[in-house]
Image 1: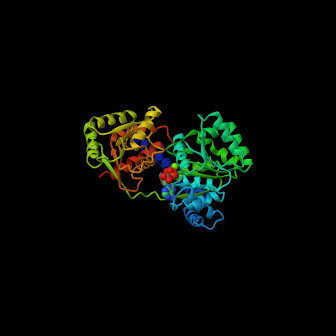
Image 2: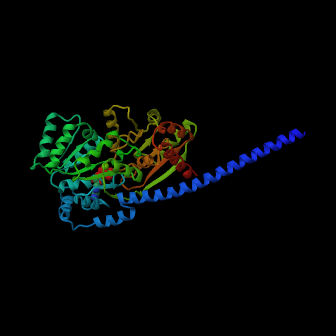
Image 3: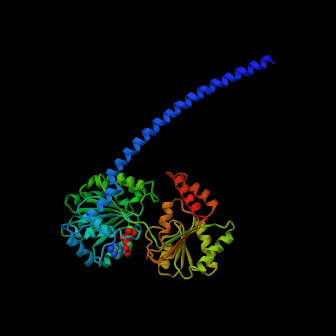
Length: 452
Ligand code: ADP
Ligand code: MG
């Protein structure tokens, strides 16, 4: 008995001394935590000051916008005249004049504006008002073609260079780039052209030295950043532009408002000092709704069909699906019920994709059932509903995708179907992405909050 007691006492004192040691460690860790918290607060403050001076803090940007909202610059008269006579527009939309003035002053600017807001005018108009030409970097040939069609109607001289340009055409463009009597105002290229064609870059250098490369526009500038939703590796190499052509003013355009993405893009493009304008993203005509997905597939599709046949009878819309297979299945279910629907995903032939897009634009089919491949370049004004068959992988993506509704400023609905299983499907997909999981959680928490 006595031995057991002494064993227990010994054990107690060993636990006591261990506890004491732990307490000392806890104390040390707490002190270390205090230290780190203090350091963190100092660093955060420094970073904030740093990024504010780099991009202009929100207060500075506001006052900057006021500074640039004037029409007494040396170029102001010409700008007005070109707006009316070349672009046939009676007035500017918010922030267009400011952005154009910054570009005309030869300064670098980032313009963040929702899709459809009118970003293209902000580099097209300065191009027409300036000597020489503007180089436009654009991620997709189809986007360039859309713009070239409009410019052709307006009789603004513009062209594009890509991998399938003929030798004669390339030669003609190279001559125009150097000719002081050239009328060519805009040259559109994909980022690959800058990244891969030494010949083109050397022609640009010659043109720059001759004072002919006046402005550079980088459209969809969020494609530079891996933090964004549409990273394109060739955009990473565009830093060469500002390094080689420091005196050509650069304008970056995007509908992605995350400051993280913007800072990253500025860094990648080697822009030292840059004015950033951000237009309002408030779309009061869009009605957002989250609905619980029925676990029974048949009931779920019936729910969607009911919406289409009642609330949206005869109205144009998009259904976004998680996978190509989902998109095909939903299209089939709709078609079987006599609804005019077409599929769109990345694995289709380009001509089939463009056929679906065209027929939908012409209202020959009511609904495009698509994956996120149905994205850039959609500017149908009268989309009355965007239904998400599954949640997006982030709020940013959801905003972009649902924002294709109601471009005409008339009322439109954005309905998101939320199902638990989708979290896991998307989670596997974003596992390799920077902060992919965090963004997904934000998306899930949006679904939960609105899910009443
Ligand atoms: P974004 O690139 O921001 O998505 P776009 O430049 O393609 O938008 O412009 C969208 C539409 O808005 C185009 O049809 C364009 O002609 C129109 N637009 C642009 N600026 C104006 C303006 N000041 N007044 C009227 N329409 C405009
Ligand atoms: Mg655009």
